[in-house]
Amino acid sequence: MSRIMNRIIVARIGLVVALLGIALTVSGCGYNTIPTLEEQAKARWSDVQNQYQRRADLIPNLVATVQGYAAQEKSVLTAVVEARAKATQVKVDVSDLTDPAKIKAFQDAQNQLTGALGRLLAVSENYPDLKSNANFLALQSQLEGTENRIAVARRDYIDAVRVYNTALRTFPTLIWAKTFFAGNKPMAEFTASEGSEKPPQVKF
Image 1 (cartoon, rainbow, N blue to C red):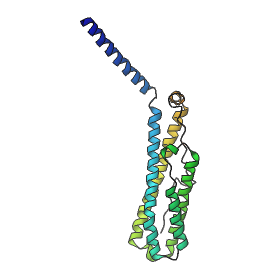
Image 2 (tube, helix red, strand yellow):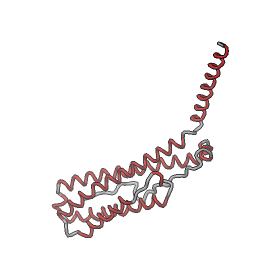
Image 3 (cartoon, rainbow, N blue to C red):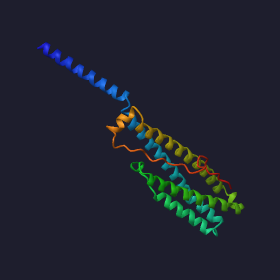
Image 4 (cartoon, helix red, strand yellow):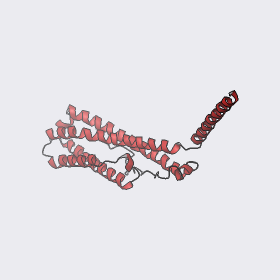
């Protein structure tokens, strides 16, 4: 009876050792690389969206402050409000990151808002009282900081996507990409607009 028990114990130990060996082999040969890089890229995209949302949240206060000093600039104020509404309506879920058309639509909406904001800030030059307003100066500082954060978030996302897409096409992770992760598609690049490597210069 004890021999049978010993054999069972030895068999179980052997099974545990074999499973550990397989787990170590799988993890060591890159099986976990693709899902890890995919999650990192998705997290970077969340950062991008968070920073753009932060900018969108600043805009109502900025528009209200400018309106208090330059209500006659109605067309410029309206353009900013409309561009903000459009930009916040264009949503890209992490499941859409493999669709270049959806990423482009998101970018285009954000670029339109950037342009409208630029025109609004240019208008402020004509109103000295506005430029010296404490609330306006605080919004200026927050907007500058947000534009810097957007630039960093975009850069980090582009880097994460590049690493993930490379893993899908290179050895040894290519093996897993063609087998267990055959459904994984390359993520769309968040293509930087010309000059977007530098945050917009906000001058008052």
